Length: 472
Image (cartoon, rainbow, N blue to C red; front, side, top):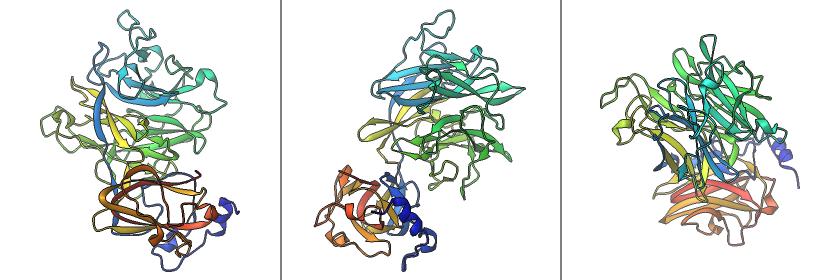
């Protein structure tokens, strides 16, 4: 069998006849066995009667409330991770007056959270609290932590957890670095900031990009008066490239106040971003001391630098609660975690700068950010040529009782493969995260693995969230 790389190189200039946009989509996409989401139109060659549809998360229970003496109405900037079976959450407890603290919470299920007494940081003469950091502990007033666990095998144990933080340097903010063996006991990695070419007066996100094997920082700066996101990279977390504004393509120039960038754990090379869109020209409809309104938008990137705003509408609206209708009232925190076999959760701050400030869990179906959507009239979509590895095609989908999905496997020129045509596909309906596609002669696709093929989806009253080629 030819390797996937050989196939992609050999067919890089393929130009199948009779397929729209062939001049742009002829190169074989090396899908392999990765899960494919519909966050953009990268794989779509031709589409009729279907559309991409974004899905807003369901707002679930409150995870954390302001209930400690060191927490105030500016509780903000949560960071969440699933760490060896334990859900962990760090958050900024206060920002009205220094010193600024970072609090910590834990959960067994991502739903019910506790604030444990850690005995680490003193507040008003006592260490019986859940604090893990105080800005008073380091020169430059280090604060607003963006925390991640370093996955590199050669990472030093005492630096397994890392954080970017805002520091004051020569009268302006920079990005500092903290390290910890456990995510609880922190120290400055170095006195000097690791990045200085930005505004940094925000939650500046840092993590290790496993797909590209370097550290990455997404941070705020101003471009001709507009708040936008810069990106810098590093191989050692100390020496960084100069930041560049991420490429938003044809997206509008809007204020993006915080970015909440995170790799999707089921597809690590796909970077998801949930920026706060800030509209400074608008006034709060219920009266507020500061101008502006905010909502949350959704952007994605396949390379970490070029981001797509496939949908210009809001992912999360302020909603019915009047306390969310002011300039910085809502924010999506850093991190995205599975909280069940069928769902993914992110954590949203609401009611910022009010006494009811809290962090709420928001829930989506697994892979459920965007779907290929069919209404009752139905339609079809055909992919560009792709090469897969595996022997079964698995779908994550939902239909109505009357809806359906069928799949055809074609060769690169658009000709149906023997026994894998649309008419032979067994009708798929229901709601399933991992449904194997079958045809009259079976479901095995091993003989075409590694070869360039196309997928043709015929759908009616249905949503297709993702697909993947696997071995049984």
